[in-house]
Length: 438
Image 1 (cartoon, helix red, strand yellow):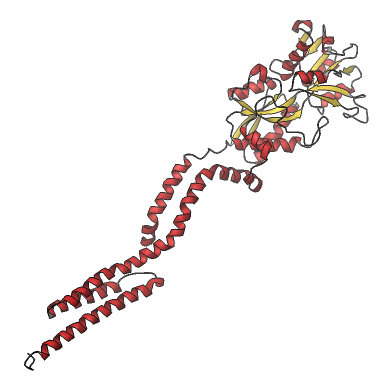
Image 2 (cartoon, rainbow, N blue to C red; image 1 turned 45 degrees about the vertical axis):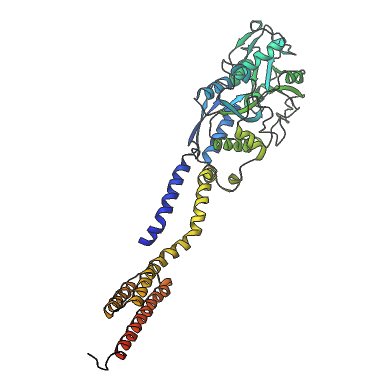
């Protein structure tokens, strides 16, 4: 164990230092909770936000969908940092800016509906002049879009009575006769849209010049609500209706973690790629209609799809590996040669314990050959015997025992050489005497 520690202490320390340095450059993990600004209760934004929150929760990210006044409020919340994610209607960027926010693409059409009392004749926006019209509350996207479209036809703000109602409240007020028209933005599957479409006292405006509006405002699309698509049994609507539609886009903080952005785009594909009453399957989500600049992650995702690791591993594992590449690559680069070098280093360290004795053995052999007296040779032989004892105490693994026994054999061999040299020396001395031994 001590030998292993001696061998691996320095490489292990080096690996730890490199790991610590690499960790300084690893991207931080994604947040475990996010906030989504979703719009009014019961609206299409709220329903979509709830689906996104559920998808994020299934991947281990806690998401809270907060109700809001609408798109303008949502955009403000993301820009101020009150929310991480929001659904925002296209067409707001020019008025409210895009500083600090990025889009993940458009996710569904949410057309502008103009319902009006059957007692009135409305063929265009300027026919709303003098009427009591619901145009949504302050902070709502419908109010901003209404103002833009009304300006296009010269309908000044004071030319009609604007009522700050939207959604179900506007629908109820129109059916109750409290207002004369309602300009609302909603998905065609909203229950109150069907209620309005089926009410015989209410008419739905078909915008024949919708393509012209769409050309003037690229964030808008001209769409056709086909006859009977709302309800085939009751033939709602009873004719094709041309609508002008902004799109809902997912907007995030500019510095929101890329992994959360990728999860949101995956959730959007799951929720909207099957198509709707107004869009073909596979059209949404799309970067084409977004009027806020795409984030880098969204641009990469639409171009390349999910990352290679995300296709193989669950979110947490893929995210860790994607973040840790800057940590893993230098470690692998360092560890691979260390692992390859460890067996030779180990063998060298074990054999060094044996081979180091050969320097002493060589010195003793030279001393034995150079000894001029019996006392000097006896001293050398005594040191050789001591060396033999020391060698017998060397501890090595079984696989290196042959090297140890070879050392001990070589010590014995040198001792025999010195012994034989001493014997020959004695014989010479005896032969040169008078034939007697003292």
